Image (cartoon, rainbow, N blue to C red; front, side):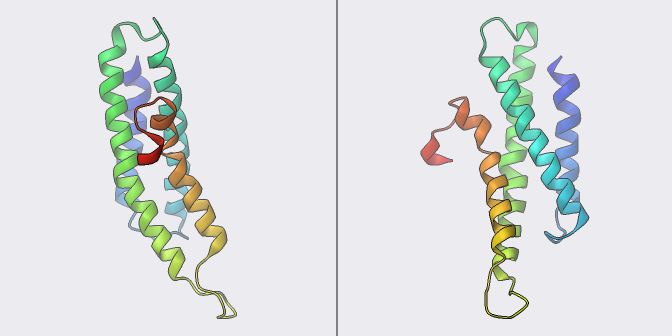
Length: 131
């Protein structure tokens, strides 16, 4: 049942909203990034199953609704958190004071930002240019 797999994941994403007010260097940030990666992978798999003829069966309406909720969280509150952390990393100054912007951290955050757009782009739900 899609509900048995996706509902707990959706609840974990909702929990990330509660802890996402932290700094990007906190333990909570690592948790948010981990759940983001898991949720993106599960969404990609579920969209693939949904698109395969005869694979979903009677759970199809539930799956569509759950995918919409999961995608809404990923590309809503999680995306907003990533954007806030990107701003935080942009404002960091190197220890020698010569550079502004934490490039390694920015690369990781932008990779996660791209990751949350893979499922809808791969399934054709959104155009690559609008992601």
